[in-house]
Amino acid sequence: MSIRNISAEGSWFIEFNTPFSWHVRGVKRVLYSGTTKYQRVAVVEFEDLGKALILDGKVQSSFYDEFVYHESLVHPVMITHPNPRRVLILGGGEGATAREVLRHRSVEEVVMVDIDNEVLRLVKEYLPEMSQGVFEDSRFKLVIDDGRKFLERSRDKYDVIILDLTDPLEGGPSYLLYTVEFYSIVRDRLSDDGLMVTQATSTSYSLRTFATIYRTIASVFPIARAYQVYMHSFDSTWGFVIGSKRLDPASLSLEDVNGRIRERIGKELRFYEGDIHRALFALPKHIRAVLEDK
Ligand code: SAM
Image (cartoon, rainbow, N blue to C red; front, side, top):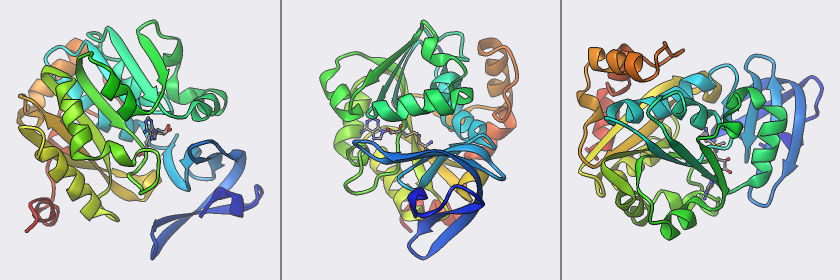
């Protein structure tokens, strides 16, 4: 359901997980509600989650646990790479993905390509706490473009490519960034030790979509690894998939991860650490069975 359907005071926001299941959250304030060239956008303050960005009726992130999502998306690939210097983010509207990338001292350049200038304007105005100044960082470059078109034109190589896109809804702006053809272009734009990661939808409500994304990436990359984390803001476990040319993120030990966080970031993160890295990749049997199409 769209935020347009509720009033600003003492109201409720309903998010459909599937056509048959939904969850409801109390809304304290609607800071913005409108439609851009690409999507419906709302910025609200929920009673329990704090401020949140909603695109096409789906919560993208909230103050309550955006750090869980963004640390889980960014750090497993960044920590696996031996020396990530050039990083590309496709999507990433809130700026929080770039914020996590820039915690790594090795990073010399982050290019973020988002299709929707209006979303960027709104997050800068209403959610500056998420980006924490990254838009002004000298290592950061913003490009407003379709991520696929940008990558098709570019011949640059990156150490890490992060796909922080909206879900692959048919007719939606990110649909063509979940295909074999697109992942093949991503692979070709990665350096020899390169890794990519994508958010891969809900493992509770859209397990088949998660599995399809995993199998698509596994058909393109020598190493594919799927993982998940619980996200209270999405009322769901959330999936991610890594494609890697050479290095296996699942082979890192707790000590490897903690040592690299100390060397490269120099301080503790709020969520991600060695124990969590190991736990993220420990998928339950029934999910592994769907991934393997059993
Ligand atoms: N954290 C989110 C979630 O819940 O999955 C996704 C992050 S983010 C807000 C999604 C961004 O992807 C939006 O800012 C949207 O404009 C951008 N986007 C969608 N399609 C795109 C495309 N084809 N190229 C570049 N950016 C795109």
